[in-house]
Structure formats: structure tokens, C-alpha cells
Image (cartoon, rainbow, N blue to C red; front, side, top):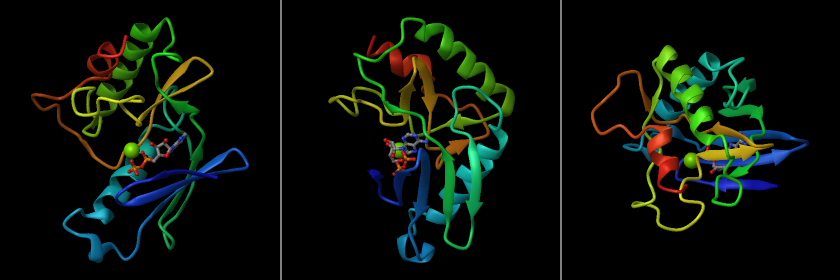
Length: 155
Ligand SMILES: Nc1ncnc2c1ncn2[C@@H]1O[C@H](COP(=O)(O)OP(=O)(O)O)[C@@H](O)[C@H]1O
Ligand SMILES: [Mg+2]
């Protein structure tokens, strides 16, 4: 089943596992710089291994630019927003800060006015998951949207 069709990748769900394949060839799509998105995502998922609230890396197929990872449920909506979202957001921010991962791809409701507002925040079994680590910075920059900022707009 196809989950997503972005500018630089396709995501599929098969047998409970997500495969995200980056498009080829890399150079054709610059300046979007698919190769750097690919590298960023693999790096982040390696750092996030064993951490709650993030997809778990299963394996990487560099020859075909495929990332296999655990499935993180459905996009966040008003309906599936867990009651303890503030607590979960704090946990998420603590983990990201400790690893110096600042996702840059969490646009707010203003930029994305229709549900699910932000397709990079998912919910599975009442647990918030952040996905899509193609664009992130190792430095905290001004104007950075935290997960709390984003979800606040919905709650
Ligand atoms: N691990 C995952 N669990 C559940 N859904 C996922 C997962 N990875 C991707 N998806 C779905 O596929 C879509 C596209 O994947 P994403 O990593 O956000 O790539 P893109 O760079 O195209 O935005 C997401 O919006 C999400 O709905
Ligand atoms: Mg995305």
C-alpha cells in the first residue's frame, strides 16, 4: 500500500513495515538535493534507535536508497490527539535536544490549513510519533517550531 508520494520519495507499507525509497538519480532533482535528504534521514534514524516516539530503523538498502522502518500509525488529527500530548511533547523535545536533532519540516496550521495539518506527526496506539527526518539541523535556530508549538495549534 502506498502511504505517501512526496517531492523526493515514495513511502509504502508492506507486512507492517514501512519502506521509504528516495528517487533516482539524485542529480536530476538538485537543487532539492535528494542525496542530502537521504543522508540526513539515515543519520537521524540511527541516532533515534531505541527512542520512544520515533520510527525504528530496521535496515538500509543504500544501493536502492530504501529505508526500512517501523510503522507509526496515522497522521495526527484533532480526533486522535492523545490527552497527554503535552507530556509526550516534552519527552520528544528532551530526546531531540539531547541528540541535537532539530527537524525543519514541521510546518504549522497556518501553512497547512487543512487536516491533518502536519503529515510528519503521527499517532499509533495513543503515542505521538515524529517521522520524516530528511530536513533537520543540528543547531537550534530562531523561529524553530517545536512539536509543542505545532500541536498547540490543533488542540
Ligand atoms: N514510519 C512511518 N509510519 C507511518 N507512516 C509513514 C511512515 N513513514 C512515512 N509515512 C507516511 O508516508 C508519508 C510520506 O513520508 P515522509 O517520510 O513524510 O516523506 P516526504 O519526504 O515525502 O514527506 C508521510 O506523510 C506518512 O503519511
Ligand atoms: Mg513528510
